[in-house]
Length: 333
Ligand SMILES: Cc1cc2nc3c(=O)[nH]c(=O)nc-3n(C[C@H](O)[C@H](O)[C@H](O)COP(=O)(O)O)c2cc1C
Image (spheres, rainbow, N blue to C red):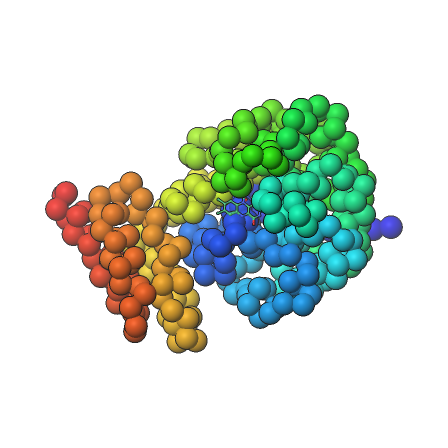
C-alpha cells in the first residue's frame, strides 16, 4: 500500500494559523504576498457546511494562495471524508482536521477539542479522509482537555491518529479547558508547554510536528525550529503581518522589502476584487496591522478604518494611508 502523501519539509517551516473570521481568502492572499514560502490555512469550516452550504463562498480560494490548507470541523468520518474530497477537488493542498477548538458550539456538536478524548473516532475520521482524497490529511490539536495532564494520554491520541495514516500534527501547545473559559481565554489562560511538542518530535521523529501557540517574535519562532519541523503563528501574524515577511526572508532568503512595496504588490489582487464587486473594507481590515509599531501606523489604520466602508472606496484610499506613513518617515529623516 502506498503511504498517504506528506507535506514537503520546506513547506512545514512557516505557517499561519487557521483563524475564524480572520483568515479568509483576502487575508490569505495578503499573507501570501508577505510570505511566499508560508503555508496558509483557511478558517475552520464544518464538514456539513462544505457539503450542503454555499461552496463558492466557503471554499473561496485565489490562485496565488498555494500552498493552502482547508481546515475542517466535524466528527463523522463519512461526512468528513466527503468534505475532504470536495476540498481537495476545489484545489486545497491539504485537509486539516480541527481537534483544538473549545467553543460551546463546538462542544455541543462533539467536535473540536473534545475530540482529544476520542482518539479512535479521530483515527476513523482521518482514515476515511485519507481514503477519500489525494492530498495530505493533517490534524491540529491541543495537549489535552481540562485537567488531562498525562503524557501517555496525549501520546496515545497522537499514536492512534498516526496509525490511521496522519503523519503531520500541528500542536497548539496548551490544554483546552472546556468549562468556564471563553475561546479567547482558552488561547491565553491554559499554560503553554512546548516541551510536549518537542518530546513528540524527539520520540517520534518520523512524524512532522508543527508548534503553535504564543509565538510572538522572530527569535521565538526561530528557536522552535531547533526542536520541531515548523512554527505556526496566529495572532502575531495577523496583528503584525510584517513579522511574516521578516520570517520568510530570514528563513528562506530573498530581499527584505518595505511595507509600502509589499502593499503595492497586493494592489493587483485588490483591484481585481474591487472590479468583481467586493467592498474595500472586506480587504483592508486584514492590512490594518501592517505598520504596527511604526511611526504613522496609527494614522494608516485610522484612514483605512474610517474610509474603507464608504461607498466607492477604492485603492486611492490605500495610497492616501500609505502617504501618511511616508510623511512620518520624511518628518523623522
Ligand atoms: C480569531 C481567532 C480565530 C481562531 N479560529 C480558529 C479556527 O478556526 N481553527 C483553529 O484550529 N484554531 C483557531 N484559532 C486558534 C489559532 O489557530 C491558534 O491555535 C491560536 O491562536 C494560538 O496561536 P497564536 O498564539 O499564534 O495566536 C483561532 C484563533 C483566533 C485568535
